[in-house]
Length: 225
Image (tube, rainbow, N blue to C red):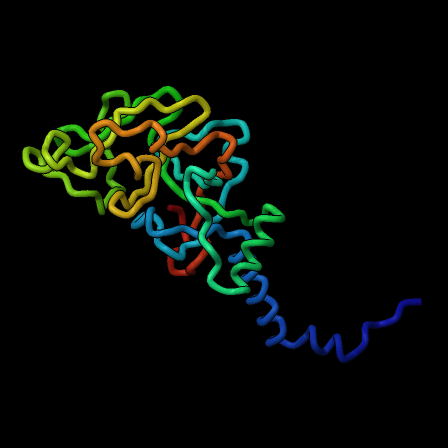
């Protein structure tokens, strides 16, 4: 013999406003825990506040390729993790890190892989990989570079300049699309005639979390990066 659910509970679950509230709460949980946040370093491809679906299976049987937008866990060379703004944000960070649902990650674009040599710049201010200039239409805000007056041979040198450097094994050279505001692989080495090897920051193969997928939030920016 079965018994029906108590009528008050049935009425509550049948209330359209209760169901809307539950749907909104579920959306909030998905956005907070599943959608990884981006930052200004990838603008305009990704804008601050964008939350992304991350394909965690993309690199199970493949390696990141130049041009991929990747999500990775930074090691100590990338600096300290940002502190949460309030107790709720800190709690979300703690739960995400502990469960692995939403760890602290960075989002950057792969420029070169293991064994490749990367440097900047050629006479047009472009990044070179193995001596070949990259076509990077996604870079809108770059560091200043003026051939003949502010370039890699001028004094002072353009802060766009770096390298050359060869990417170590199991490592990747990554940059933000917003080069003028990106703490990336070359950030600490830019504008130096003979940078110390310790200034380079690598995304290692073990640190790769996944490939950036569709923008989940805000609704007005739904779609792929």
